[in-house]
Amino acid sequence: MIADAVPSGALRWEWTWELPAPPEALWPLVSDTNRFNRDTGLPRVEDARDGEELENARRRLRMSVRGVPVAWEELPFEWVRPWRFGVVRTYSRGPLREMRVRATLSPLGEDRSTLVYSVAALPRGVLGWITAKVQIGMLSRRRFAAVFRAYGESVAAGDSSVPSLRSDRSAATNGGEKERLVEAGVTPAVAERLIDFLGRADTLSLARLRPYTLARAWQLPLDEVRSGFLLATRAGLLEMRWELLCPNCRGTKGGATTLSELRASESVHCDTCLIDFSVEFDRSVELVFSPAIGIGPGPDASFCVAGPQITPHIVGQQLLHPGEEREIRARLEPGSYRVRSLAGSGATAFRVSERTDERELRVSWSGEAMHPEGPDAFAEEIHLRLRNDTESEALFVIENTGWSEDALTAAEVAADPRFRDLFASEVLAAGEFVSVGTKTVLFTDLEASTSLYQRIGDAPAFGRVMEHFDVVSAAVEAEGGSVVKTIGDAVMAVFTRPVDALAAVLRARRGLSVATEEECLRIKAGIEEGPAIIVTMNGHLDYFGTTVNVAARLGGLATGEDVIVSDRVQRDELVRALLVRGDVAAEATPFDAEIRGLGSRARVWRIRPRAS
Image 1 (cartoon, helix red, strand yellow):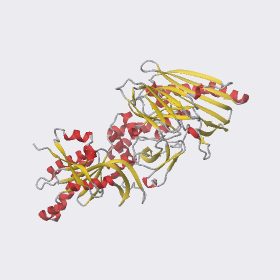
Image 2 (cartoon, helix red, strand yellow; image 1 turned 120 degrees about the horizontal axis):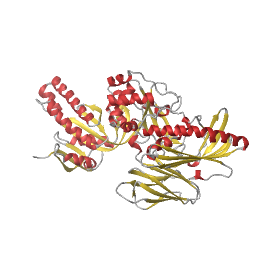
Image 3 (tube, rainbow, N blue to C red; image 1 turned 90 degrees about the vertical axis):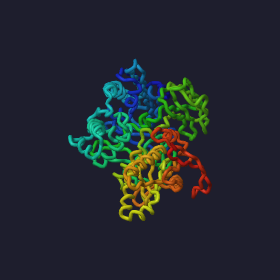
Image 4 (cartoon, rainbow, N blue to C red; image 1 turned 45 degrees about the horizontal axis):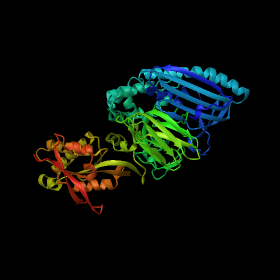
């Protein structure tokens, strides 16, 4: 780590504390340099690059300390989660010439840790020497100790709200807020946790509320918390914000308060990764929340702009000199990861699994691509050997590619029936269309509806059709889907997974057999999975693309006693598992069909009840 090298003439301090929690639990707070700087009394920082873009995530920053201007260039933070992080700052103004900071967490038994925090400062003249001695050696030591001990006690107590350690105000709530949320439809468990969180959390925690992160901390179902946040927004307790995220570093690069402000036709620039990216609902747009009442500093209040928790999906970051090789050891949770260089697009993907004892991964950077040596699956205690084979410095990034687990993406929200019902006015600007990634599209159509009108008359038949819509819509929502629109007697719905769409059809048919006993209605259904785009059509969000067209065509091939699905849907493991369930007992039969618009015959599958 570059922060380890101490310049000649520097003053050095090293402090050690024992904290009542393991490193993995302490890391999110100890490495949150933005929060730590705020809690220890440092002022806010400002970007001083003046439009200049620096290589390898370097920053130029400034702040004012009791009226004294301070400016510096900051190397990229280096870290290995959950063990250590460090940074080097070179000052152009202020009492110091350079400062190097390093923090290291080590396990101390099963439920305690040792935190070693070291600072090396190179003063600028006598005044700088005196300032460093007093400010760092005396005042900072006491503040640092108080803050880190408070973090340890908070983690040990299992407190997800992170109470403020300063006098800034958290969101004030009154005794009637919980009852108001419950009346609005929020479950009592979510309402209680949310009100408690808003009343006790600090301003940094409140500035960017992520429902899924809190759901995991509260141990509540994700969909229950997501729905609760949407209802709380409708009730006026929260506000929504659409954030634009760089697909590489996941840093926030702008945002909007309404969907109509997003412009998919315009590219967004990341000044850290030095790339341009487009607005995609499944990758680069996340919905976050904040209290709708004054809470002090907003989301743009920065006390540090580049610490490990600014990009929590990055588990390790190392800056290597030309020709340098470095070994790092990390403890990673099972999942998918990759190693990449900030200077290029090439990456090495690998998995962490409990099923292997492999530990060593060697990766070298050639300037154009990453070159791995070894298998692609490793144990949780992994040893990475990184080598920079170029004549320039290279920033290696090791990141968890499962970032979306805690991200409430715009693609997911747009398909949420609760969102579409509560925020019908949330639409894209006219002419804008945005990719939503892979979606499952279901089309159903009432079989023989024309003859129904002829047999029982217009008014009764219309009532049956409306009743059919209610049954199908209820089945779609029960399986986690969302009705996009109705077209005549047809229903179009979207789902995240093919199995949910198939389950919705089966549920709807059971519901129709009960609701329309005297004149059993039958629905034809088609299901396709694939990429789609979303646009505003007739005042609401609608889906378009080949996937939508194919789903509609497949529905046209059905008879009312079956479901026609694409080959991709039938190959889905969860779909196959559903077909063999005892309460379903269905079989899939392949056949080739001409799908209008595709220009060729395609293999599709007819799913129907198995003959007894």
